[in-house]
Amino acid sequence: MDFAIAPGTDEWPASLDVDDLLALGWEPVPFRQFILKTHSRCNLACDYCFVYRMADQNWRHRPALMSAETVRQTAHRIAEHAEAHRLSGLEVVLHGGEPLLAGARRLAHTVMAVRQAVGSGTEVTASVQTNGSRLDREMLNTFALLGIRVGVSLDGGRAATDRHRRYPNGRSSYADVRHGLRLLEQSPYRELFSGLLCTVDLANDPIDVYESLLEFAPPLIDFLLPHGNWTTRPSGRPADPTVTPYADWLIAVFDRWYSAPVRQTGIRLFDEILNLLLGGGSRVESVGLSPASLIVVETDGSLEQVDSLKSAYSGAPDTRLTVFENSFDEALHHPAIAARQLGRAALSDACQQCAFRDVCGGGLYPHRYHAGSGFRNQTVYCPDLYRLIGHIRERVTADLRKLTRQEACT
Image 1 (tube, helix red, strand yellow):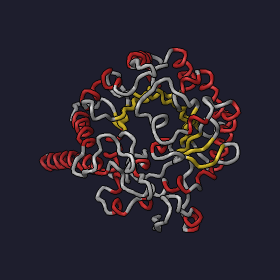
Image 2 (cartoon, rainbow, N blue to C red):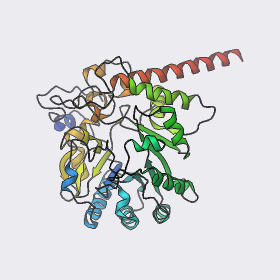
Image 3 (cartoon, rainbow, N blue to C red):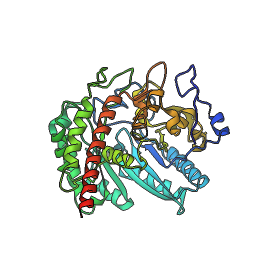
Image 4 (cartoon, rainbow, N blue to C red):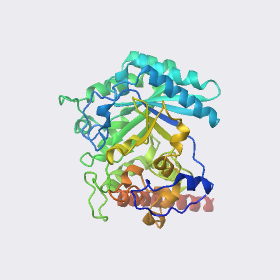
């Protein structure tokens, strides 16, 4: 169902009236991904980190570790939500900070608590997103026992990684992460490896970065655009819309990936764009119009929206709800969470008129922020995404035409 959203005087979506939406027949999509901030501190000092280096600094006022009581109450709330919506499956993501600082036993307890609370009627898949520097056999044995999949953040080879991802004393983290990834490549851990997360840096050569990541044979690579918005522009993203440095970088990787004689890995952004161009739906927030179905639980039990909103302004992810006082269903009716489930209705007027509207989907929600108007804007990466999507469409269209001609000749 499409909805017309009237403009308001407040930063959008503060002016969004969820009761009006419900009266019009809108129904929220239940949460299926629960991101648990098991540890709110980190052993690295990455200079682009949206948690520690950007606008929202609320981590300073929260406990470092999620307590056993908070874990129990979170598990109860997840089970309550799963039962209310008859969910056949859901995902728990152990996150941070650096979640491995919580220790193998605490992470195992967290996953087991959720599975026990939910019961056999709902499958609970579990994963951890880590910087990889503390991966060891004890940790991996625990993950193997519980089927916890492992995603690792890495920006390429040593030189690329060392630009940003160092220890607080300035020491390189690359050797430790590489050691952890080598362990993850071995049996019986290999099946746990979910992929690599890489933040794009224009100073790094795109092909060097891609081939450095391929060294670890990841099943998936997730290239992320650096966080920024219209008020605080990302590095290298100029005001001139004719300049597309991030598209240029990503197109170089796409052409290398797409032209390879065999598929060497999946690249989430490219796979999602291809799927959308061919008429499918999206499974991520960065492109497409699929409703967001994730919620963050902080170490103190606070419920927050997607944590990358910390890059926008102080308090941007906040809902003023907690697992101790509120259900996840109450969070579903929060205006900011409803806004990320509205699809086309949440897009700016410019996005509504765009040829790539349903593929781009307005880009990642935090990248749309502009002080004074809020989040109902184009992404600050609009020129880059437009060019990237257009390039991918041209490549695929040319190949489909070639296939059609070949079939006509046989």
